[in-house]
Image (tube, rainbow, N blue to C red):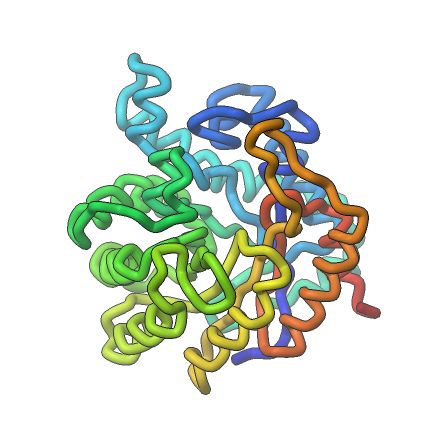
Length: 327
């Protein structure tokens, strides 16, 4: 794999919550796509991540689904909902074009794509959450689905069509807790958009198992077999996200092993490792969390991760630390 590490943003929703107040909503941060001031907030947040050196920014569409939007506003048509989801890609593009105009010309000079699947940097990753995120019941952390392969594809198809209509550089399937969902996604990409670059990032419950208790190694092997048979479309990477830093390094080693000599990226975007206090509905903050997270990222990089970023509770200031060439 190409060893030039790219920096993904990290904690878009966390940062938006800081700016906009709690996004305790079934649509989470994607609810902001429905409001003018929300759109401004998303664009500004993207620009903050770009300004600290992020090369890839994820859209605010993780929890956005056509059905979810139409349930939220029963007067909304499916076409309108599709356009709101597509708008998340356009907002990210605008943020990049503003950043390019305002950042120093020499900064832009350094942003040369280092991957065959990338034509330009910074790049837009259209974020699509797993079926569990649409459920908004925490099942993206258990992978306890009762859906078949075909039903999972049926669930993802409308969101995929929506983001593809706005031409993202890459589609990011985030927090996938279940190997069957990963196979459904890969097959759907081959059938619907065989030339569209995409990655799949898994959610794991410990240092070796997916949330659904299937070994990560097994899920990666399944995907690699599909890819080698030409049956996975343009899969450009596999990763893990929203895992605590103390699990991330071992999971990266499993991914790197599974990818082998194939020219695929290995992604890691862990959360900050703080604990959620369900009773108090708040995070238990830890004074050492930042340092531990940064040390974990360094170790992930040394062990072969090629795209690094953050997830829940991470902040642009952390991304600034890892984008510093001295680190």
